[in-house]
Length: 320
Image 1 (spheres, rainbow, N blue to C red):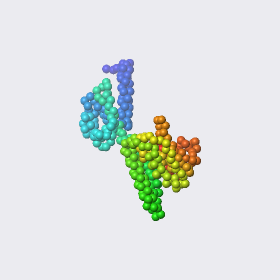
Image 2 (tube, one colour):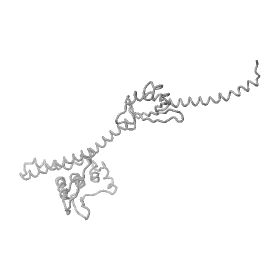
Image 3 (cartoon, rainbow, N blue to C red):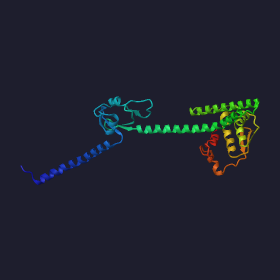
Image 4 (cartoon, one colour):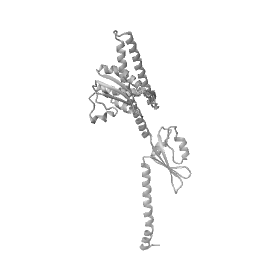
């Protein structure tokens, strides 16, 4: 039985929309599949029964085979190995660390799991933290070197005086006492820096008078001042006690005095005075001073105008 051309045309017109409807859907499915395979993160799709129905290459690389057809709980037991330091990530048995993001596939049953590999990121952060600790250690060592320089110089001068055969027994005993005092101060400085390195910081200290602080500074700086033809004098009009870390405060004043000596001062005065609510310590000298442009810069750590300077003297003073 033959079919008329008109009837064949009508049938084609009825079937064409169905073909046209399925083509875009197939193209969209292929496109989504390509996107899934190209994703830089691991993608896993779980159905309502908890079975893995699809996994992209990154997920396979992270978790290993097989994946599809297994329960997600089986994969967790096989591939994951949580550690105490995981934080917001989870460690895998292969040593990598991943971040999990789980999203329900509403309205369909199931879940979409995204695994982001953070192994390299955490390694970079660890290396950066290590470099920061090394930098902090370097600064601490530089600070310590600057802090101990003054009492060490004084101790060396006292030791050189002890080597002289021309001094009296009384002078020898006095130099020995001063040498031991400077070495004890060095020990205190090192202990303070160790406390800071451990993060415990420095306490408020003990009760002192300005006179005891000045005694310490004079013992440290007077022999150095004499070597540079500089006169170091003290004027103390305060009587009240105050809480302070003696070694730290003395070291800060030492830095000011040594700065004055190195700037060519021939007279440096230490003055303590007391007001109604304050005890003030002033260090003045007749040195050449600083330009206005330099006055702020000298307070920055490691900024120095001296060939052998560390740039920490005034920064330490400011921190105290």
